[in-house]
Image 1 (cartoon, rainbow, N blue to C red):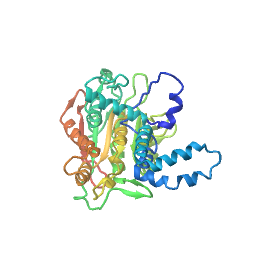
Image 2 (image 1 turned 45 degrees about the horizontal axis):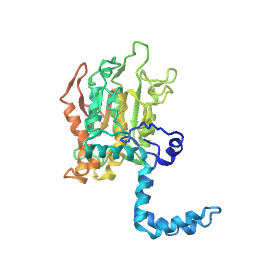
Image 3 (image 1 turned 45 degrees about the vertical axis):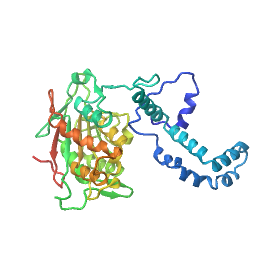
Image 4 (image 1 turned 30 degrees about the horizontal axis):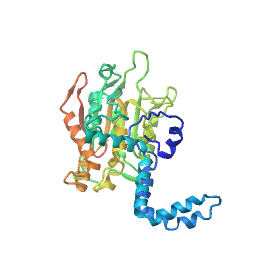
Length: 371
């Protein structure tokens, strides 16, 4: 699903039968959002104004190109049709999947060319419920193998046994600061979330499997500045002889434990610690940053096999979303409300051996976990 039309066309021409496998509800092709802007008729018309003049400087272009440009600039409806097709071909996997979903809904008949895989074997059932009910219309279910998997993560002190632990930072309305986030060039970091995650990490205990393998652990954030900050803070805890972090193995076996969530798509670990970073007094999509992107959030929340520890502020997310969409009609942001509501439901749902699906751990403004 991350391949754009230009990247797919060569492979699709090689045979008369084709099988595409992907998930269009996770990350799109690189820079697809930026390129989609040029498929807007007004933006395209502006680009076409001097396109013929600029292209005339290139030798050996076929004459048909000049003719095609002339037709596009003089026929508005043709231009709109071409742009609509180009926009669909930018993300062909998504276009096909969504078209078939719409067709199934309209006709009541199953698609003959696409199907959705609804069983997953990675995430603990509680984590699966959060992901399924937030992004997949409650259709994603766990394989029986997931519940039978041996437990590889223990806890110490008062760290909850829940598969999902939310480290909940305070609202800025009760904190003595304007923001928890700090801008670093074009990125952001949040030192309080980093401190909270490290405190939680120290209360996790690795349990080697029957095969002797150590459980794996990864720390994720959507922001590169936070990744850099976390790498510096975690460096003293890494054993360079065994490439382990407090007894946990790295997810890719290379001694690296901290990644941007985008770069870890396709990866997995027994334990995922994630920092969402954004937390300020502002509202609106700019205040949410990467958090407003459902594909990015889907990747981040669905990497953990056994335990997901998430550092953020529920109050900030609710306030930011309600400031943009007080009536809850904006479908692009509704997933954040679903996510928070699902977290509240999982606080009350019991799972065998681990207790409640979610435990909320309050964090003070210095990153200390509540006793």
